[in-house]
Length: 255
Length: 243
Image (cartoon, rainbow over all chains, first blue to last red; front, side):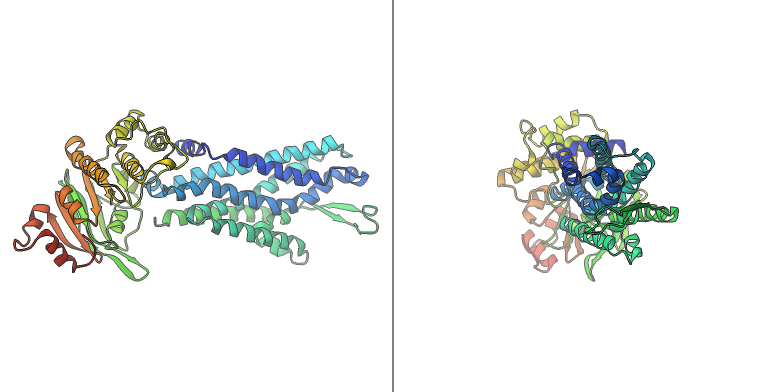
């Protein structure tokens, strides 16, 4: 397995893979920071909670796209070079699937962690009021990583099983729209739980109430949501199922 | 055991169409076996089944005396080198870097890279990106990667495709030298009768997914003394395909 991961790293030479990841991180941070360019008093007062309220939507829009492009970038090289036919005679398909997946998961995982660190730094630099809610932000990090890994495994399976990379790309885009849609459908909470792209919204830790156009933040209050452990188990189980199914499909693929 | 490859009733069906129809193939150790047949006859599918890239619907494959199955596959494939259809390469890497991917996976020494590059005459070109290679050079790189572990069995699917006459001659001479120099058994497929005639010790002729002839090239020449090799081939395949 380590040998295969080494090979994957060798294949990245000249592919600007890490540059791509850095660009994604910058794009994400630019979006988040844009809203705090000239923070109002309310922005600073509610800063830590406001961020937790806003980030799941940004994650639903950006992270599936990042997963889709990362998976495609890692797997497309095998299709364009006609390499799968060779590699599958040199090593087991399952190990090949795992090695590529490991690298992809590591890449998106590190990206999400870097984004998290930068967001926390943003709060301190801008001078958000109150104590930094460590426990909530650690929960947020875990609840961002879980759906990201879930979506990444799906994108990885599609990118490896289909020569035509647009299959994975369009699935990612369609899922992303469905995920955003599910967040806005407050009356249909099961939809965001069912859709893997809606899981960022379903794992939302913060609710904001009392905001109107007229009164703005005057009567605003925040509610911290408890996430059911059963739902977390459901997400982990769904991630494992996507992994097993993707791996099985790749092992069965005729080349 | 003198048979390196043996298949029994090997069958592959794609969407209701039988592409390989109950093939009983037998390849002897140290020989060059030419798999001859028109385009679309089922040569590549047969070879892919031998490499586990395609699952047969029916039949049995025995390689090195072991039945080919998901359990034995990895162990068997360690001793097989292959080039199927078009050569495989990472265009953004050099030939040496490409070959290094294989040596890393197979835990082979670096000197193997130098040796195969010399054999396929790509030494001196190994630090060029393979995307800049000509088709002939890519084909030779494909053969180099198949030779890298100096396998017991080499499977080459149309290895002279797209090569100019000088390149074809070069590859032919290389294939002819392999059994003597390295003790390899070679299965080579082609739709060109003249090519197989110059290369093979034994021949299997496939037509419409069926193995219509199997035997030594000498026996094929003597199949019908009144007819030329071309006429014999046309008679066996029912006149389908090119020569």
